Amino acid sequence: MSSGSQPANDNRLPRGWEIRYTIQNGIRRPYYVDHNTKTTHWDPPLPEGWEQRYDSHGRLYYIDHNNKTTTWQRPTPESLRNYHLWHSQQTQVMQQCQQRFLHANLPAGGTCANMSAAMANLSLNNQDEHQLALTNGAATNDLSNIHPGQNHHRALPYSDAEPCQPHSDSDQGKEARDALSGPLPPRWEQKFDSEGKPYFVNHKNYTTQWHDPRTQGQSSERKPFKLKYTDFRTLCFHNSDSSHIKITVSRSTIFEDSYHQVIRFKPNEHRKKLFITFRGEEGLDYGGVAREWFFLLSHEVLNPMYCLFEYADKNNYSLQINPASSINPDHLEYFKFVGRFIAMALFHGKFIYSGFTLPFYKQMLGKPLTMTDLESIDQEFYKSLLWLKENSLEECDLEMFFAADYEVLGEIKNHELKPDGANIKVTDENKEEYIKLMTEWRFTRGQKEQTEAFLDGFSDVMPLEWLRYFDERELELLLCGMQKIDIDDWQRNTTYRHYNRNSKQIVWFWQFVREGLDNEKRARLLQFVTGTCRVPVGGFAELMGSNGPQKFCIEKVGKHNWLPRSHTCFNRLDLPPYKSYDQLADKLSYAIEETEGFAQE
Image 1 (cartoon, helix red, strand yellow):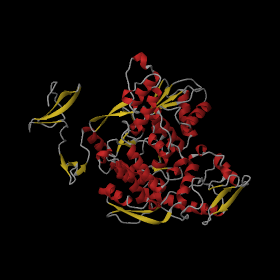
Image 2 (cartoon, helix red, strand yellow):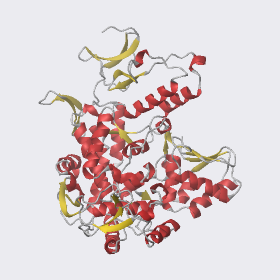
Image 3 (cartoon, helix red, strand yellow):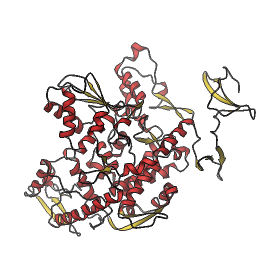
């Protein structure tokens, strides 16, 4: 190994080690000299207290004697920083659990057990209503993708699931109920299956469906979230099983214990009532222990030593699949397990600690991904494609081809975006195709098999079609829940550009947040601007952007007839100088509800 440059010392290296550089094929590459043993290595030395060994199959793994743990991933300064970040969050996990809810009539504080008891009471109150509605034939649920004759479980009371909430008294909810009291359309007939569930026959085109045709004018996208939530909970309720499955875990080995039990269950068994027990803490589970299990296990899944997920960008809010997860020999089985676990959380109405990126939710919903979706997970990559889109390659004299280099575990690999792409030059004429292919590749790079395994596991518990009620932002709310948003804290920790706190548009903005929005809509506004509905445990003062701490910011941009825009990497809202409170309220309301693409960066 010959060196073509001067050695460089690194204070982070152990005593007696040195970093040097060599030139290989024109590329400057580091290597490491151990003066203690007079040897050289391509890999940096292991941190103090770490050791590498081989298992009985000859596979290399690493032992952390400091924490008495093992991992397949070679420890690096970055991976250790991520581990310490993850570990430091453990004390916050149950505090977050106690703050999550989905509807205003559920308590925002108190213990998990108290929240569970309140939901159990709501569930008992609402079950009679749903049973009566079904007996009377008022089929209000969108079950059109399930066909009469399939095997469905009879609805039976159970206290472990979230309650089926009654429809709200909004105008849209009233319209839906009024429609059900009217006659069926011509040539439609209502019938009942062997279990007494109503379905509808269309004699015009000889089809059947569960969905009541009198409510088909209301698209799922236009329904309020609470109505969508009610439909989804009712769908899960009617496909639940009154028997139960028992899962027993130790707190110290919650991931492995849960994996071995969840993965061995037959697919439909995950719909049974959950009876969770922590070893040494045996007792009755009325929902609180199950809630704690979902929260603790979802945090354990993030453990960087499992190499399954990583934080997207640097904001430490949302997760994406780790492209290097294959270093863990069992990673695909683990992703299948995580898919089942996430579906169980949705089916049983429980929350998880941290959610995924919005692009990942879009993949779960089968939605196409676009270039703008890139910004939340890889800002630099997005900026480079945006520059390419807006500038002429010929004028800049750039030479690019339909291929990309990327690094996995220190190894540089090349990927052709299309057959023989390494020899096809990118021009102004074909750069749109290049951007499209590059975007698709960036979202699937090293993640395709893992995503498929996750979705396969998810489908073992419930069909992905059941999520069709929701968009990607609502799916995050459903999975992670909401917190009671402290508006005073939000306002105290907001900065302004070209506005000040006394500007009339700013006064109107906070009036709109306080008086014009309920907590759900405030969470949606927060999603629109920051990319997530969750607030850090320390409040708005601890909001993170792509480059570290980044407070919520409102900037004066555009003309009074423009729509607001957001920059999720910077937690910034571009608020045009609207001329009245009503105009500001209308524009912001539209942005909150119609965030698909046009108003976000």
